[in-house]
Image 1 (tube, rainbow, N blue to C red):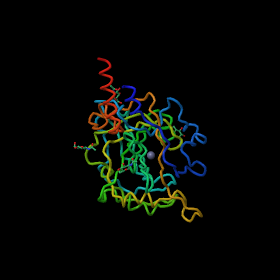
Image 2: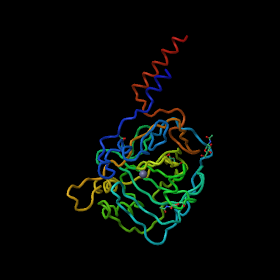
Image 3: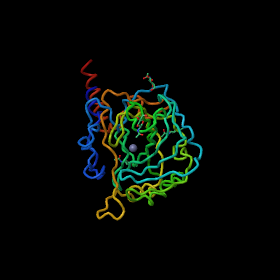
Amino acid sequence: MVLMYLVICSVVLLPSSSSDFCYDEGYCDPYAWGDYFPSCHPIIEGHHSPINLDHQVRRNLSLDMLHLEGFDSTQRGRWRLKNDGHSIMLEVDSGMTVSGGGLPGTYETVQLHFHWGSSSTNGSEHTIGQLRFPMEMHIVNMKSIHPNLTAALDDPTGLAVLGFFIDVAYADNVNFRPISDAVPSVAYKGQTASIRPFPLISLLPQNNLSQYYRYHGSLTTPPCSQVVLWTVYEAPIYISWAQLKQFVNGVYSTEEGAEKQAHLHNNFRHIHPTFSRTVYASKDARVLTDATCPPLSGAAFTLLIALTVTGLSSAL
Ligand SMILES: *[C@@H]1O[C@H](CO)[C@@H](O)[C@H](O)[C@H]1NC(C)=O
Ligand SMILES: *[C@@H]1O[C@H](CO)[C@@H](O)[C@H](O)[C@H]1NC(C)=O
Ligand SMILES: *[C@@H]1O[C@H](CO)[C@@H](O)[C@H](O)[C@H]1NC(C)=O
Ligand SMILES: *[C@@H]1O[C@H](CO)[C@@H](O)[C@H](O)[C@H]1NC(C)=O
Ligand SMILES: [Zn+2]
């Protein structure tokens, strides 16, 4: 009976749908990154990202809302939006930091970027109960004591990344327009655009920022360094289908004028096992607590009940 439950609930690690995501020439398959970047080999007991978030999370009452310093003010100068051939990235100026919520120190916000699928596939990196969202946004923060990224990658907790699922709603998200409206100007690899700064908090879900999951993982792109404290928020950001399409249909992994154009699709890495890692749920996290098991279908549930009854009657 318990075994049956485990079998039904266990995570099936299937490769993601055929990916046309290329990490430079020849590195098209995230499964093959390890051939070029040894640190990307998902060794046993390694702690790689992304992961599937399931019912095996542990509540940690000390995990309350993170302190997002400077996210509510408008920076001076300009920010830079960039197509690096793997994602669309927004580089922000120094002055914003992330701390609290169990993080071991203060982390300076460096950039944010996106992962997406295609017009027929969802493309978040993390999944919740096997469910993949259309997109995921990552806000990358580097521990302030480090002078540069190279130094941060040598610290097991050198980076703190805030992950937000992005889902589709009917209406445009007006706060998301500074980014989605600028995507066409960075459609091709290597293009950059200058963006007027805006309060970063406006991109985030208005409530629910105290609901999140926390675990120790890695970068999801080469060199896959296992130095990231992940905060994955429960509540998604909502954008319209038209805004999602700017990414899904309008971004290329190739340079403008290249002989053969390729859309940038499915730029997410496959799900990794948690092994012995603990995934914490914050004090206010809502779903996935208790022993809920999302993939349990009606038929499986009936079977489970039947087995329980059979087990009980044979025990009596
Ligand atoms: C809760 O999280 C904090 C901060 O990450 C950690 O130090 C502590 O050990 C965790 N508590 C439990 C009971 O796991
Ligand atoms: C993809 O995302 C949509 C919109 O959130 C959702 O309804 C659907 O179930 C997702 N599909 C998969 C296969 O996860
Ligand atoms: C990064 O910081 C380290 C430690 O201070 C220093 O040794 C190194 O030269 C720096 N690297 C770069 C690329 O600036
Ligand atoms: C966000 O918080 C509100 C108010 O506490 C709650 O009703 C809602 O269910 C939460 N949404 C999610 C996605 O957890
Ligand atoms: Zn990312």
